Amino acid sequence: MPATPSPQPRLVSLRVSPWSERAKWALDHHGVAYRAVEHFPVIGERRLRRLVGPDKPRATVPVLVAGPEVISESWDIAVYTDRVGSGSKLIPSEHERAVRTWTTLADDAMQAGRALVIAAMLSSPRALDENGPPAVPGWLRPLLRPAARSLTRVFSRKYALSLDETEAHTQAVRAALDALRKGLKASSPHLLGSFSYADIVMATLLQGVSPVADRFLALGPATRAAWTREGLAREYADLLEWRDRLYEAKRVGASTHR
Ligand SMILES: N[C@@H](CCC(=O)N[C@@H](CS)C(=O)NCC(=O)O)C(=O)O
Image (cartoon, rainbow, N blue to C red; front, top):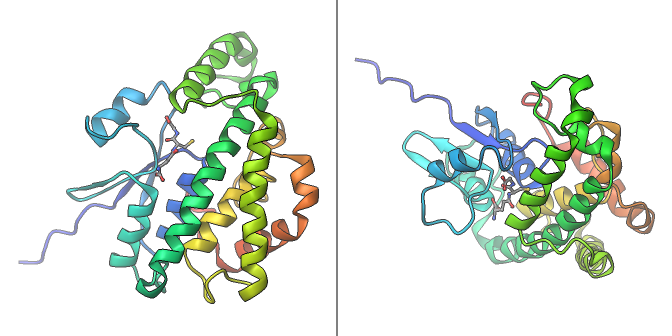
């Protein structure tokens, strides 16, 4: 009797989030088919908590549900794709330590970047309107703005974001970008000699400096502005060029799940 095909993995994710983009990139790189299910922050919190279980200190996306496995860290999803996928290894064993170091660096800088983006969203009524649930019609969104603002504040508390420390956060992002610039000098165009998860985490960190083109991830104009740091974008234009080239060359399948 033929084996029952296992159902397609489900990726619970947040379209705009660089952490979700990491997971999608790893899945697409390896040709692993999946169905993306959009998570809505705060409103979807209880459902997400049920999915990841009570032990995880913070319930976050991306979460990959693949048969009996529930994988709730982007790193672990990349490891999973290396295990089941058909592409080149994203975390080759000889580079695992180095890839982890780049991932920790990106994670820390992205936490700072998240505070900058959320502060910008809170001060942009249009960005708040653009990020309401898709079912809400455009004309109703300005009326729901106070609700959108308080949901964004709840989100900010979940991640203990200090929204007014702009300078410190900018410095944290800058430190990671300086490290990237140095790392690329040694072995351009890839951090570790060939394409790896290190390139993915550092490229997706740049989303909070200047987002990728709409064909990779479509954003409303006010949302795009909230994700853009003009000063950093000028200072690190070389890295944005690197990121854009990497997307052109390596971000296969990006439009499938947008
Ligand atoms: N360590 C986690 C961090 C993921 C993370 O921070 N996810 C945020 C992205 S903004 C999230 O889940 N946001 C939605 C929410 O908290 O409801 C990973 O690497 O997967």
